[in-house]
Image 1: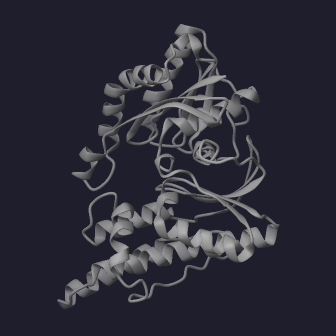
Image 2: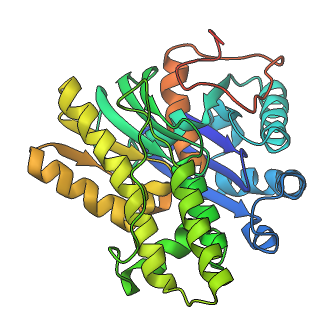
Length: 339
């Protein structure tokens, strides 16, 4: 069964063809990242315009690379939530038109479910498992009970980890995206030189908070500037990255121990972070747990993960019609049918 996936939730216009949820036949991405670097972050209007310009060609290229035509496609999967609403609408409307014109089933896919599925095209892993999803907009610990059954155990109360890294990077004067720049620069610094507070959240032992860490690094930079003091940027980057990763790993390990999980999965754009990957491996080694990480090329937004999750949603008959809409926010435990 071949699924055509379409992803346009942020600044990547992507299309892929995946067979039986696991075998990637093509994975094409057009990004407007270089334009957004000029502004230090994603500009929604620019992203939407570039999606509209690129999507037709990206879909054609994905079909060509997969050596198939639209007639070979069994279903069209598309990201419909969450994300930038204008960007999402470009992908959803294109997918709806294509599905209607070719009489092909339309499968709505939740973006964060797609990130989890990046592990299905990277590893031989099946639910149930515990998953940490870390990206620019999301930080969740989720019990993946089946391919379409998700339970949120912990989540951020404010900023996502990726958002905090990006904003901290901008404060340090690093190139956007700040999280990537921090990861590249950190090996040159001393991660213990700057001490940041360990966030505490009342009400749930598994929830995160990153706004205090973000404020702490901003204050560190501003206070030094006001006093005319120099800042060791590589060490500041390494110390901040350590603070974020320690928070993620501490909560993930606590959930796994409390809930009895021995199969750990990490997904999302920040799953490419080298310290997070290394510390997750250490955590699993000391607990004798199995760790699954997506291939680096599938950590960021892509359509192969959407096609993969779309395959499993399609098997559960989670299909839509021409009334499908896009949503800027939606919980991962909600499906198209029960939203």
